Amino acid sequence: MHLDFGLKLTQEQKLVMTTEMQLSIRLLQMSSYELIEYVNKEIQENIVLEYSNNSEIVISESNIEKDGVNHKEIVKYLEFDNYSSKSYNINNSEEEISPFSFISVKSTLKDFLYEQLSELNLESSKLTVCKYIVENLDSKGYLDIELDLICEELGITKEFSEQCLNTIQHLDPCGIGARNLSECLMIQIHRKGLYHKDLEEIILNNLNLLSENKFSAIAKKMNISPLQVQKYGDLIKSLEPKPSRGFYTGEEITYIIPDAYIQEVQGEYLVIMNESIVPRLHINNIYKEVISLSEDKVAIEYVKEKINSALFLMKSIDSRKRTLHRVINEIITLQIEYFKYGEEYLKPMTIKSIAINLSLHESTVSRAIRDKYIALNTGKIIKIKDLFTNGIAGNKDNFSTQNIKRIIKEIIEEENVKKPLSDSNICEILNHRGFNLSRRTIAKYREEMGIKSSSQRKRL
Image (cartoon, rainbow, N blue to C red; front, side, top):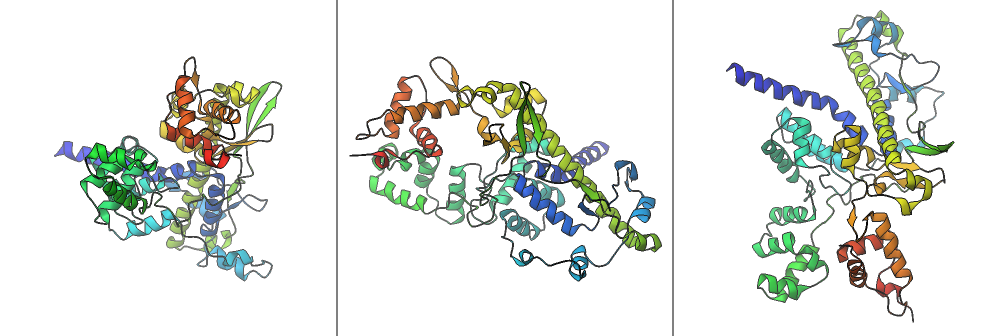
C-alpha cells in the first residue's frame, strides 16, 4: 500500500508541475504577433498587470514568499476593486474609446477545442494532457510533436498519451490531432462511416501514386479495377486535408515581426533581441489605498492570485527570450559562413544537433524556432526554421535543402523553353548526379521557390 501511494503521488506531482509549465511552453512556441496579442489580452484581464511607466512599482521576487505573495506587500502596493479595469477605463472621461474595440475577434481553433474539452468532464490529469496536445497542434491542426516526447515531458505512459490523443481526435473539426495526412484521412473515413479495407490501403500506401492519377498502377497492385480506384480517389479528394480550415490560426497574418536582429560588429555576428515586441511589464499599484484600508480576505486572495499570475507571465516571457537568444547564437556558430557569404554556404543543420549542443530537449528547440524570424544586417528577414535542413546525400558532399533548390533553379534556367523539363525529368537529372530525391520533393521545392510547372513555363 505504501509503495502504491508513493507512485501515485509522484505521478500527480509531475502533472501538477507540468500544468504550471503550460504557459512557458505556450509562450515559447508563439510567434511575435501571437505573443503581442496574448500579452495585451492578459493586461486587459489582470488588474495588477500593465506596461512599464513611471507611475508603476515593480514587485520583485524578493517580495514574494515561497508559498505565495507576501501579505504586507499587497496591502502596501495594491487595492481591490469589484469593477474590472475595462470598466474603469471606459468610465474615465479622459479615455477615448477606440472603434477597434468593437471589432469581433475571430474564433481560434484552440478556443474551439478547449470549449469542447470543458464539456467532456474529464479527470484533471487527462484534461491537462489533452490541453498540452492542443497547444502542440500546428496551423493545419496536426500534432506537431511525437507522443514519446509528450510522455517524457509529462511523465506519463504511452498508453495514457494515446488515450488522450484519441480524445482529441474525436473532437471537431474531423481529422484534428492527426500526426500526418494519412492519419487525418483515416480519422475522417472512420468517423463518417466510409471505411473500406481497399480505401485504407490507398490512403496508407498509395497516396503518392494517387496524387499523380496513376489509377492503373494502383489497380494492378491491389488487384481491383482502375475505375474503382478512381472512385476511391474522388472520395479521398472530398475529405479535408487541413482540419483547421475556417478557424483563425495566425496564418492569416501577412506581415512579419523579426524576433531578433543579426548585426556584424568588427567581424563578429551578434544577436540583438527585438525588445519592442513586448515592452517591460510591471505590477500596477493603482488600487493601494482601498486595499490598505480593507480587511476583506477575499480581496486579498484575489490580488494574490493576480500577482502570481502576472509574475509567472513575466518570468515566462523572459525565459522565452533567453531560450531563443541561445538558439540563434548557436545557429550563428554553426552557420557562420552562411551569414558571411550567403545562401550557397548554408550547411545541413538539424534541430537535434542544436539541442545536443545546448543541452536542451529537441521539443524545446522546435518550439523556440516555430514561426520566428530574424533580420540580417543586409536587411533581409528570414524564417529561422528555413535554416534547419536535413542533409541530402550527394555524390561528394552532404547538401542542404537550400543548395538543392539552387541546383533545381539552375537546371530550369538552362532548359529549352519550348520543351520545359517536368518534375520527373528534373528528378532523373538529380538522381543521375547522385541525389536521391522523389518527384514530389522536386515539385515541393519548385513551388516553394515560386517557379511554375513545366506546362506553365512552356513558350512557343
